[in-house]
Each structure stands twice: as C-alpha cells, then as structure tokens.
Image (cartoon, rainbow, N blue to C red):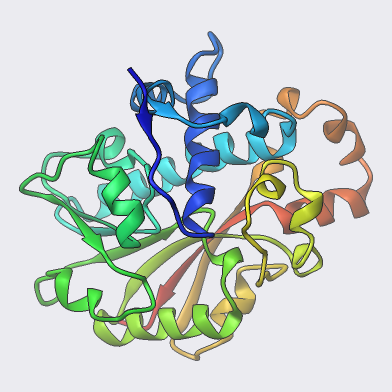
Length: 273
C-alpha cells in the first residue's frame, strides 16, 4: 500500500533524489552501498521517482558521496566513541543505523515538513533525536544537548549548494561559537556550477536552485582564522569503472580538475578546543 507524499518545500523536495538512488543501488548485486530502508520508503510512497532516472553522473555522485560520508563519520566515531553527530538537512537519510557504535549521540535536523515525513519511517531513540527546525533558526543549538567538551561533528550532505554564502557563513559561525573545535563534513559544488541546476538531470526535475559553491574546501577555512582545513575527497576518484565516458574524459587534466571541483566532500574544524 502506497502513502501520499505531503507537500514539501523547495529544498526539502530534493531529499527524494538521494533516497531513490540509494534504493536503486541497494538493488544492484555489485552495489556500493546497502540501504534497505530506502527501498522500503520508495516502494511505499506515491511519487514519480522515475523522473530522476536520466542522470548517471548525479546517481553516482549520490551513491559515492554516501559511501564517503559514511566512512568519514565512522572515522570521527572511532576517535570519539561518545561524541555527538548533527546531521543537517537529514531528510530521509538513515546514516545513524549504518554507523551507530552503541554509544554516540545523534541528532537529525531538518525543516518541519521533512521531519514529519521522516517520522513515518524513522523512530527516535535514547541516543538519536529529530529536531524540526531550519538550520538557520539557531534555536536548534539549544535543542542539541552537548556536554561541555564533548566532541561534535556536523554533517551537511547535498545541502549547502542550495543556500547563499552569507547563510553558510552564518551557520558555521554559530556552530563554532557554540561548540569551539566542532568539526564539519560538507559537500560542495564548484563556482562554475552555481545557477546551472537546469543542466543537472534529477535536480532539474525539482524547483531547487544552486546558490553557492567553492572550488576547494580550503576557501571556507579562510573565512575565519580559527578554522582549520582537515581534508578533501573527490568523488570521481572512486569506482572509476562505473563512470562511463566521464572516466575517459577525466584523463584530460583540465577536465579532471573541473570534475573534482564540482564533486567533492570537505572536512574542517571550526575553531580550537
């Protein structure tokens, strides 16, 4: 039996794209990831997911970025087994179920409509909670209970590109001000891709608009002298056999550079502990 889909906001609608592609990848015998909850959700929602089918690059972007985010969150948990993870713009992401070590604390934050949809499929628990607020309504900082000195990791997957630099700057400053030394993992597009969402299959089937991008995560670290750039991972470097013609085009150095800038995940520390 399928469920009707409540009306989602402009950016919130994009949560359906990674959900669908994670479900498709789960069905592959050689799948990069396994997300059975995504399969269940897609099968239960009355929505035209097939309209997203025409985009191999976006499909692989989402599947591979999920793999990298999972790896990097596990790395943080390995260093801080009792740390706190804040999943910004959580949508229908089930990362907590994949990386939970039994001791971390986890907060999935998103707009009220997205959380309402999320709660049809994901339950809260003693160590994982839902926060129904805009990430720019900094009242959520008071809802995320972090003990003094407890390590914090914020995760922003497929999110920042839909907001302005001013908004992203303000968010990072608020996190740094509340939890000095907090870390953030975020995905970004390049500058040249801003305002080009109509050229990106899957995204062009929604109402969302790209508003911000950087060519390298170190640019974000330059926003504040207390920020530290910790690392960056390029999606095109993973699972090369799956990229089709793009794999061969990236043998050209300038194409490889541009593709790296468009599809990347960066890691920063916000302030010093």
